[in-house]
Amino acid sequence: MNQDRLRSDLTDLADEVTQVDLRNRALRTSRRLGTQRAVATSVAALVVLAAATGTVLAIRPNSQAPAPAGPSVTVAPPVEPSPTPSAGASTATGQAQSALAGTRYYLEQTSTRSRIHEVRGMRDQVVHEVVHKAASRCEANTVSISPDGKRVVWVQDSTDNASGVLLIADVGEEGATTLAEGINCLGARPLRWKGDDLLMVQRKNRQSVLYDVTANKQVMGDPGQETRRCWSADGSWLAAESDGKPYVSDTTDLRQYTYDPPEQEAAKWDGWEARSVSADGRYVAVGWLGTDPSRQDGSFAVVDTETSKVVDLPGTGEVRSILFSADGTVLLRRGTGITVLDSGFKPLGAVTEPAATRNRPLLAYVP
Image 1 (cartoon, rainbow, N blue to C red):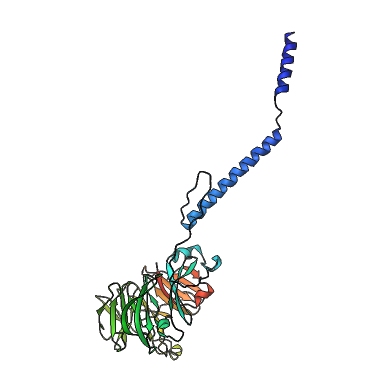
Image 2: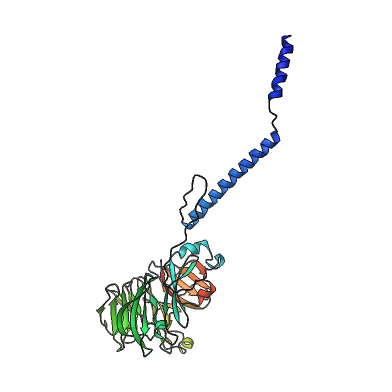
């Protein structure tokens, strides 16, 4: 009888238990795990993206992350938007990206505007603009940027289209400060930087004058009979000519050298001059002088000032410019892009320039 009673109680208990569909439970568990994996994957992707772009993300408790803020840039208005190059047109290799990690400054010229482009990594933007009259020659011939990329100088045309007022402005800021009047604006390179704070200009009477742009005053008259001056990026080495003889000099050493340009090319130009000097004064990049008094920013060869021999540069194609930077690297620019070299002219990487940038003068590189 006890066994019959036990069977009856077990039967009643089974009737009270809710039936469980194991298949539905398994599906719900699978969906929940899938959602957790998707959230984890999204968070991981955001962390990787933040690491790649140098952006710090604050992950909230509900697994939501704010979008990283874009760069804050001050531009002198009015400036039209500058196109951003595609990823494929920016760099050739990851090695090149690290080899040229600094900032390049290019000059864009139109009939009424001179724009300074700042190119860093994959970003190309206008950071300063000088507006001038269409018939004005001075501004287009003189707009220049300091070696550290902080200041812009130019000569504002007066009335003779050959001289004007020397102006200076901070990059990206409106307004300008007058440094001097009656400054010549013609020639291959009328304004020449000696480091970041000193600027060599020429008055209408052909006297060369050195200005301290931070103190807004003249600090030196013509230092001698030198012509065709060019300084290294830090201002420590001068390349110039004296009595028609080229030389390089710092405060303790003076070294003369010789250079005979290619005869067939030389016939098309009015001579040559040093356009860039290495940080140790060992090398100079030389460029042509035009047959008319207009700016020339390019260079085509490197001369060893100790041996007077032309350096054999790597690569093929027409050389447009060679720029010695403050950190010792060399930017060798050809028709399709830049080859980054070390101080011994060994390649470190290559950067492909966007089509719009290839025809613009490269004014400066800040490591």
